[in-house]
Length: 568
Image 1 (cartoon, rainbow, N blue to C red):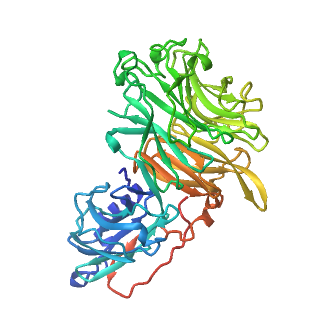
Image 2 (cartoon, rainbow, N blue to C red):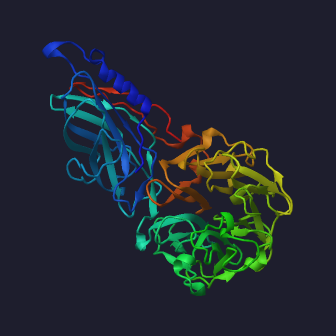
Image 3 (cartoon, rainbow, N blue to C red):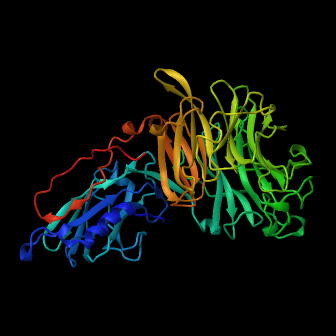
């Protein structure tokens, strides 16, 4: 787990440690020791299937004198919605480091209870000591619940104790959809999420069997299927595998970047992907990893498999390259996202490609079918220098394309009123939505606000221009012209690989699959009602402020109720 410490707080603590008189009260035998401490709820989901989940980070810095014996840490889990979601809770010591250390468990794992006590028996030195509270969830934990400690109390061998202030939001429950070495697969990447007319959730992704790298490599397309709103998932299905085509090994017949589209009228599901044959050591997006023309072994191929039974079984791969790709293009590939169906039944699928050999000669577009996926027409490129993208319908019926931008660290955004024949750049193009150059997901939602129906947009990506961290949901109430900070929702502050994909689960929820910091693929289910609320109204039990506790001689504790807003 990639976990970070607040450097400003540690600087203050270090300064205090260098000036003993600043923290010591009194002199001689009657001296009182002051210990500075705080507890942080990390912005990570707690995941079903993970053995450990970082529930709370407790940082303790001694003041005045070294050698204070910290005897125990008491935790109150009273801000947890249902303790029955938890299988066990355990405390670990990380010492002066900042990572969750499973090598130093402090006592045994405990069955969940409102109040838990963990023996510590640690002598504090001159450095900050870090302790991690870890929780393991039951397989049937409720995805709508949250987990949080209400209070933390330190106890010393000398009879001193203190409440430790807690900051951070209560943590959501999710699912570790795919982890490294599940079914012997090294890495799972590039997920896409879709919902069938029967309400079944489908997530397709790369099965990178030997290593985490992109094509060319031994990669197949896998699919996970859930019929209960994401609470449980069936065993993986391999839905696209080109075997040893052309007498070449699997490592030279990789498929990648799946995209899904569901026809709500017929129920047919199409999964598109790109296939490379030969070209060992090459990549379809670089140099001659893919070339003009259609020839297998030179140009990367645009492939499709289909299902007519709600994703249970899938057809053999079909090659659409000669139908869809222009011969002068160096590459045409599906965008790894879900397509949409317009009110008249028109299917719109995002796509991407390359004009030429240079790295910046990329584009994003859509392809359209008016006959339930039998025939497709590829639109004109929406923006030169874009690639992975997703389309959503606006309130006036136009289609917006939100694109990964190779020029700078802002999303590219274009709009079409004629299904991709012509495009206009949106006012927020390369101005509003930041990115670290990574896939993002956009979806439209029809909701009721203030007694009338409204169309809102939901966008998610790693909210950073530096690294793929801080996976965040954003909501726009005006067709993407503004994305108010009051409606940003941080899901995972850790560093993962991004690549989120959104889909509506049912009337009341949306779902998201992304490459998170706590698992290779993470699924979370988000209530639409909460998504539409500003921060101040979202979590009924927001955290305490970011204060520092002073450890004093034992006295009757004063219980503090949370006062500040939750972290979005």
